[in-house]
Length: 536
Image 1 (cartoon, helix red, strand yellow):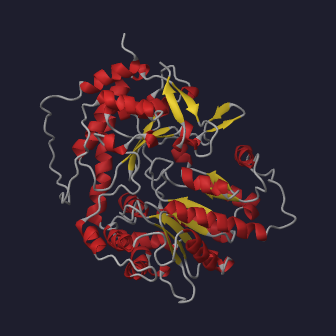
Image 2 (cartoon, rainbow, N blue to C red):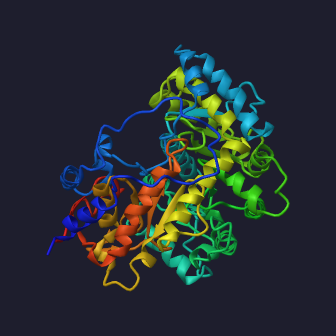
């Protein structure tokens, strides 16, 4: 009998007919290819990929990208295929060290894209800060913010209130354990992995409060990315002095790429107003979130995307963003504070500390770790990303990919998100003899690499932790495989080939082997660094 990996290789080979049937489609793309790049690797090279997967310790981050013959759906961050307008703008890049041309164009574009409230009104007070990517922006922000908070720490601050619901109190206390001076909580609908890591690194407590509809796996609720308003209100009413900032991630990446409704944003604003707490966006996929509001929220069906974006950002005091997503560029990030917002009022000198951080970590504030040509490309990206034509096709392509998976009875998070399709592993392996300790999500992505496609596990291993020698799943529980669709990069035919490979795993899920961790189980942000092997 064939070992499981050899068996799946044989099944993947059977997917490659000598004469593939042409796709039938009546929906043309709103763009055409101006340049192409051949992958340099044959889809038929299964044995080579199998060896490389084992050499990489089954870790998708360590697998060489040039050997991916199919779709690289590891992330949609920085993987956008840029437009000719962007490439043309890059040719005109000004590489001056101080005050380059692109800097001023970006500064002009920010209030055009996000609303006139984000224009810098005080010529002496900077309100927008460039970083080389969003992760750097949030790292510098949370480290500085934690320092500001501890300088003003009340000497008589109390312990956690007994009025907190037991589950919420337990979750917070589990975060506190082992931390030094854990006084402050940053709640969100769901922090993504590195955002959560940056908050923890700053010795603050990240707390995810996803909506009840998401936890109940409600297939019909269009705004599963919402925050749990009841839980947030309880948190603020009982331990509000420990909550210096509330975050909303738009769209909610951890929760399946799901959008946040305008009503939810508005209600959160009301709660933070009541408690005099600033509200921020993790705004990486702001345009996609606006599209979902337009399509699914009553009263917005006839409102243009730019106007919806203005309303969304009217409700917040600041935001950080990775422009590698809805900036449509390959590198870049930023941090913004509203001139008359609550955060600026509370911390009037914070902007200068951000400039100091830029100088120390990124270079001069007018380029923020980016080449001048990157800033030029960003301006064009921010102009395109809120266009109806682009968003209609972008998100409909992700929907078609999700529908193809569902046609093969693959359980996905419904409705499909804006940037990715999330396969629900708990439902995928339901009825099989699978234990959390088997880490079959890691096996799933390793086998998909053998098939020629790269996806990523965002579940028990990525968000779980090792405590006292035992695996503790994330709470609230998430257990997904994410297939992120790079912007303007693939055609439907490419994505459907991924669905065919997933169908093989679904048909023979009982033969997917467990894996064991060879290295890194107890590391911080372990999923980026660990090594695994199949249990054959």
